[in-house]
Image 1 (cartoon, rainbow, N blue to C red):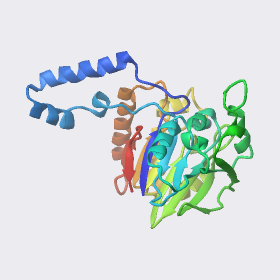
Image 2: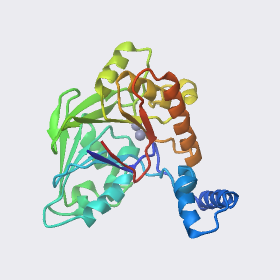
Image 3: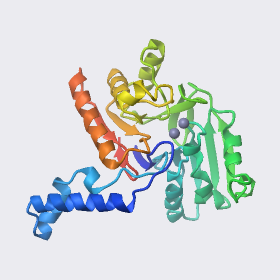
Length: 318
Ligand SMILES: [Zn+2]
Ligand SMILES: [Zn+2]
């Protein structure tokens, strides 16, 4: 299974500013001077070995959209945040004579998770089939509302694609594009749903916009079962622990610390932190990642858990 991240930011898309880029260049060049980089060869090894991710790259700013490659003609994607615009461009560039079929699994319909759909180019192509799966009664209404006057110029009803809405039931598994898919109810304002994808003995869990209260042992146990032995869990780690237990308690999101605890209890192999806080810059996300890795080492009581922070364009093979 190959998982590709088109959007990883929570709540609202963000962009690097001119000042951010200048700051990255200044700190990279200062470090290069201190390392005595004075030839193209030294520059290449400096870029590969000495520069931190936040110094050379960016986590990006699109809101949630995560593709799981199917290996067949159909596409499979979780959520239609602003990353869906770029995902749609990729689909159009790969287009051949076969009609496009896209299966969308919706965690919920908060705006950051649907805002890319009006800019999803395949929706404007006749012959395209888009199946939008979800557990909410308001699924179709939300997609139609965001494209209605006076807020958007193109009415949903004028889209050329055949767009179908398919209601799923929590805990009731279905087969979609070759995957065994199981939805799970999560704690979030207006409710959200996580999805467990299984195929060929591998399992990937997409679990965003989910607040965990570890004092509720029945709920914790249900999530441990949902994550059990997964090769990859994409986890809402929007806040640091301090945020999660103080001002932002009950805001519907979770922390890196809770993510590690649940993943260890469930013997997960790889925890990928996702739905990054929009006010965090690249250095802050990287420092949260490093803290999380240290925390995991401290409380480890079994196999090591791999931990990463998702970035736009990231691919994970499981
Ligand atoms: Zn969200
Ligand atoms: Zn939400």
